[in-house]
Image (cartoon, rainbow, N blue to C red; front, side):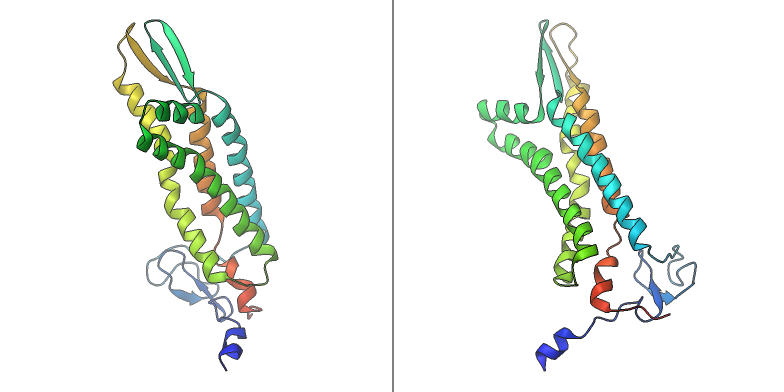
Length: 213
């Protein structure tokens, strides 16, 4: 009996001839333009176009992330001597100076989180098209995690902005952002848009079976 229940398709709003509101979650009759509860705009999903937008923004984020790691993130000038630091170079220098906690935070926020987001969004977009509907709940949780951590990916840019504002001592010492700061900010913004373009309702379509008309 338990195995039989597990094989039953999940009933979604689309399968019941309704459309779910992405703002408050209320199921509204299909062809309704605004949610009856919160007034949010309702729209039926276009699986193909939605995933195309996800891949396009994700690719743009990957392209911007390459120069973000190759070019200087921070340019420090002390008594006329200029030193450039990339993201990884800055982590290594912090580690060499004994700032292990700060080095770990910067490495996690600037390297691990962006790479993890690229992999997670790519996996969600690929599995939404090819996966037969297994592990749908786990993939939904993964999407929620990606959306939650997106805002914390800018910590490296925030550190650069704060240092640039505080350390401006003319000839003694100045800190200026490098071109990598712009590339990194663009990469984070593009991946956040990619995650926003992904419609998690697609994950449940294969599990739910054909939609009613």
